[in-house]
Image (tube, rainbow, N blue to C red; front, side, top):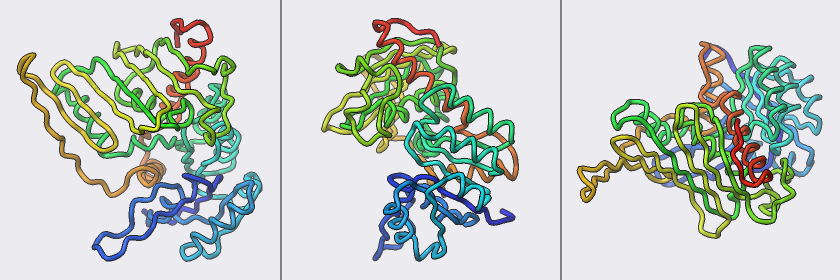
Length: 348
């Protein structure tokens, strides 16, 4: 790295600016952060110079939390003013889903060198397209924070599929359960993983929404705060390479998610806690083994930040680009369309 990258953050609540608690008494230093601010803190060549939010109390709380790291952190309530005055190298967009587009376009057109935007990229395809077009026109890497694309376990699972060791991928079954198993809030992660593993573009689907969401023909959520504003859903998704995927979510107190990836010669079972490879010698004899996963220096938001800077300096393709993230929005909007047309097939 040849320079210090100046970053700004739009949206400081939740995943925007949280700071992990410090560990003491054991020889492990710096928990991997789960926020954009933590990523800037832990990357050796970035600094956060300013933050923006509509809530003054949230801005002051964030400034206090990070005062020992960035004592001169500047605060704004207008992101356009912040972009104009600070002229940052890097911009993080961590606002509610339906506000991403204008902020990302403004950052791309305002001289930013790289953008890390929260998931989903947008809630309308036209907004996603505006963001992608602005980033590509200005040669700005636009990365979308589907965090599991920088997670060692999920990368290892995809590596196993791409290696061909267990044959071609045939089906994906992905399920999510929790009170926050909402389509646009957390379902986007699981649907993105389906796209990630399928390695193709979605071709058609049919789907069903949670009962009581007959009004939900387009995104009408509140940014993920209230589960009652965003439905769970079930869908069958067919990809251009003939991979068949089944997505299912349900609002339950029992929480968790899992993915089953079936190939010609075996099956991969992966969750946020475990990665298993299952092979068979016969209908009656199965072999199950835990897959060893390598440690990574940087994952999640920090991994995304490292990747953006690497692409800025050396070129290349992002693993979670705007164009990849667009496929997830395409599927989610297709789910809405299928449900309201009577659970029929929708061509994508």
